[in-house]
Amino acid sequence: MSSMTSHKQQILENVSNAFAVTDEQLNFLMEGYNEEMKAGLAIDRTLAATKTSELKMIPSYVTGYPTGNEKGTYLALEISGIDIYVCQVKLKGEGGKLAINQYQYKIPDNLTAGDDINVLIDYVADCVVDFQTRVGTHKQTIYSMAISIGFAVLQTGLDKGKIIAFEHGFDFPNVIGCDAVDLFDSRFRAKGLGVKIVAMANDGVCTLLAHAYQHPSTRIGVIHSAGTNCAYYDKMSNIGQFKHDISGNDMIINTEWCNFGARHLPKTDFDSMLDSQSNNPGIHNFEKMTTGMYLGEIVRQILIFLMEQRVLSFQVDQEDEDECLLLMPYQFDTSYMYVCEADTEDLEDTRLVLEDMCRVSETTLEDRAIVKKVCELVGHRAALLLGASIAGVVTYMVQHGIGLDEEKGFAIAISGDVYKDYPSFHPRVCEAIKDLIPDEVASKLSVGIVQHSRIVGAAIVAMMAEKMDQEDTVMS
Image (cartoon, rainbow, N blue to C red; front, side):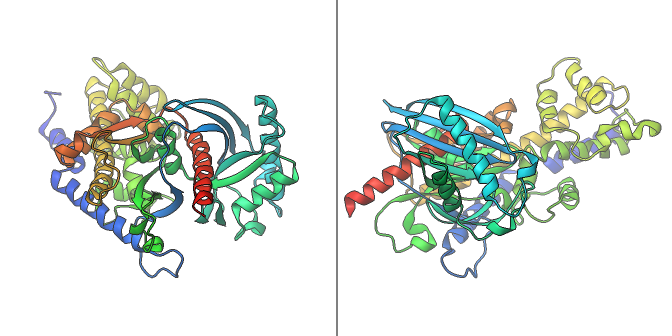
């Protein structure tokens, strides 16, 4: 790009500077995260809340840690959009050995709305029956199950929570305010299923525990894909509604950090444009700057700007404007960034993305090098912001004496398509965490990519629920 004009160089430098994140900005973000964690924890959700926080800091009601030596067979059910996943996990102990059986089912369109949700739940129960037939469960055995459903639930206990809203195109007015566990449990029993629903679990908690059974020093779970979330262990006495707890137990907290950052994230004009054009302007700032749902769209906005400024030579034929996907919102998929960043030499893969996938006119090598650079800028910033947020959680935990074992260290579990499939994302996140925390803490940290799907973590939640119940019985 040595032949590039000074006009082009200046514009590209401006874009590069806008997406560069300074150490001061990362430290400011960490401090802000720490403040919002404490504000969210202080809210007593059993009372009418007058305080607010960008972080919901929702108690999961899961206490204690898996050891990797527990044994038993547990079930998990996940409803994500129109997909139903049923999973059986056999825990074999011996330091985290397990065996997994999992099947996927689809919810028919005619069961996503109606006057009676029992019709949908009966269908889900039929899926569980089919699954148990396939894997050959013992008919005389009652299996503990945890559920993870894509509905907004106000959880008030490990196995208690009222449905407060529907998502993903579902509409059953008669069920708002009903207890989610009771709904499923009662219909499952009516169908004669040998299943007892013992817990509800969300994606962050499941990610943490899916890793923790095999790596017992795991203290933080992060899911980073189309959306993002984080769960971590905290002392119950730090949580507003349990502030008088004297058990000394640690509980997993679901941060719901997607909404973090209105005051602390280093936003650019491109971020503001994306936000204003989104279907939820003004919220989910962190999600919009770091996740697979939005990263490709940020790149697309920048490329359109560079086309308008004549920094990129390729154009859109006005007669075929409807055919150019680069002009259509969210048509530059985040996965294209992976391809462009990994491209080498003549950048042939980047040419295919632009000319074949996005349908722009012929591109030059300089064009392709600029597009690759834009992907690097957006992807690198996202990784730094994620790393700084994780570092903020680690810093809080170290300050409060949570989780850091001098011998075994401190493990962080991360799952999600962006994290697993974006080749440079993992090392960038690790580098950011390491740079932002003291060396004596960094040396004890490990960051692992979760090998099992999060529904496996839901089965571990069922095991933990059973374990907690047994401990309560012994104590009483």
